[in-house]
Amino acid sequence: MIWYLLFFFLLAMLWLYARGHPASPLTVELPDGPGPMVIAHGDERGEGLYPGNTLLYMREMARLGVDAIELDLNLTRDGRLVLMHDTELDRTTSGSGRLIDFTLDELRQLQLGIHWTRDGEHYPYREAPLAISTIDEVFEAIPDIPLIIELKNDDLAAARAMCRAIRKAGQQRRVIVSTFHKRVIDEFRRICPEVTTGAALGDALLFYVAQLLGLHRLLRPRYQTMQLPMRYFGLPVIGPRFLRAAASLGLHVSVWTINEPGQMSALARLGVDGIVTDRPDILRNLNRAEPNNKQEVNNA
Figure 1 (cartoon, rainbow, N blue to C red):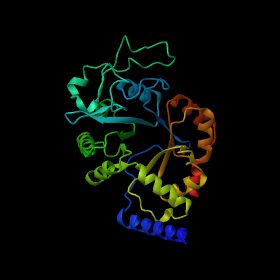
Figure 2: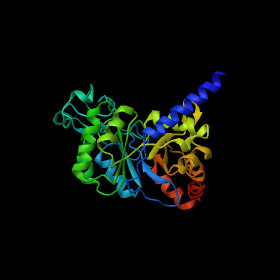
Figure 3: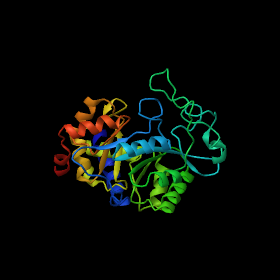
Figure 4: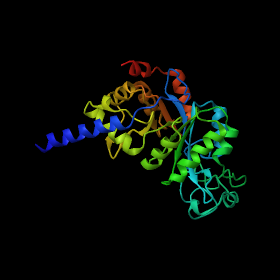
């Protein structure tokens, strides 16, 4: 009896969710090639080609010819959005403490990339350290490539600052904004409805359960894309059933963070829309050489 009650409760929740959250169209202009999109990951741990979340990384990825660039943003004390994955400064800069406690001018004094190494022995940016950058500088320096932006702060001010920056630069049709924080992305969607967004954690979990039960068509999601791991808490996430369900709702699915050629090839054969990787050079070569199942998934 309890399982029947749970089922009908979930069905009611899905129905209410569908009524309360009408879908909006995909507004970002994404490449639609035969293979999965090559999405450069802003890695700062030495697995990528350059220190992530820097203008150097973004310029080099643009030169490489990736389809999109992923980056992370954190708020400063004076309300600016800067490229940084961590909320603490210690791992990636010459400073220490919480990033939110510093103004942009203070952060400009720090050195980036000094801990970055590919082999644990060589630190190429200690002699030529990099500087912290704002999202405004990114929009100016990298004018064309789609950007997948993750807001790291659980603070509504981050949503508001992001909306202002996008509108000021006229980048509404170029960016995808996402965050793990549901209330932040809800605020962003409310004030910036013209911008494509990714699924928050709660959104993705609800979709996962709905497609397992065959109820995904009841959903009318407010997000247009999902950036997901292969597995979550040990459970497989990405598979043919999941991708068919996403395609039926017009959702764009990217998988992170994939660096092994074998995994890249397997995901391409499954038909994922995009792969987030520290090694976009490898993925670009695979896309040229191998067939994929993307079109068949989208037409299922």
